[in-house]
Image 1 (tube, rainbow, N blue to C red):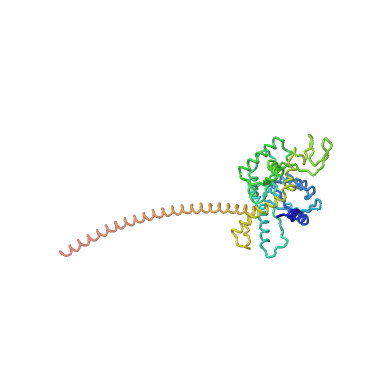
Image 2 (spheres, rainbow, N blue to C red):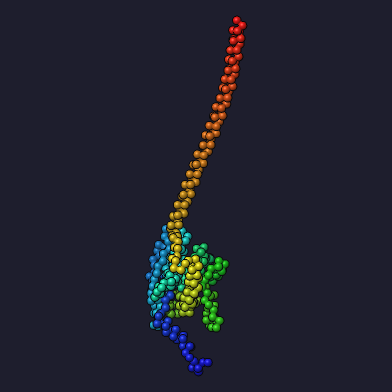
Length: 387
């Protein structure tokens, strides 16, 4: 039976708030996409600070054959109203930028799996102090605004990412498409995602909170988010100063929901669903990895690392192709030798048959000569006797 003032259970959320406020938080965000789609600009715009310097993409159209996807890690500590968050941003320069993009997703997928593996190994240690946790909580996948549909490369990596991390698709540089073309493009992407069975992050709908449920529905309907990234202040026609891009026809505002979905994306990542992204990563993606590994490995056994460098695979295939061609050439040469040997055997057999025929003819002739000589000797002996 509860006392009139209660026993204090209702104060647990306040205690939890104090603990969280004291410890702070940490959030790991990965950005994946081709160069020049505004990944760095969006990150700087999201967190209202220059976390990373804008790269020089003057040579991004110079395609190279032997370059592979890299992993860049950017760490920062953000503070707002005395609450601190340790932010880690994982950039993937080189993805999709080259002539041969086969297996360009391998370093990205391996990095995500390696963070799960590292955390699992730390949990298995006898002494578990402060664990290093770089598990990816959300992955922003940047889609080039072509107006057509997803490329095969997009589909392939989104399939692989969706099973490992909270995947959030983004249409970058939305101001390069008209509103009608953008809406059609987003619908085509949604259809491809559904047809290909690609798993993307969906905000949970809370049945006991209608306002939160409606907000989650709005966010889900907006995916893939159309984004305009800019850290520059520009003046609008009505005298306002906003973040955006200035054109001859006017200003494309970053935080204007009629122009893009930036505010929705920021709400999803930071204001309303950051904790759910973290919880989903821990309770779903990490647990799925842990379960799959524990079913196939003994406790404490290291993971078998497959060396699948795309460059090495290309060299291996080239060597295999060259080896196959050499084998075919040798087989053709051996086949010619075989035909030559068969022809020589037939010739020798024919000569042998001719020699056998000549020998038989000589034997017959010898027998006939021997018979004639024998008859002549008998007749001579008979004549000598009569004398």
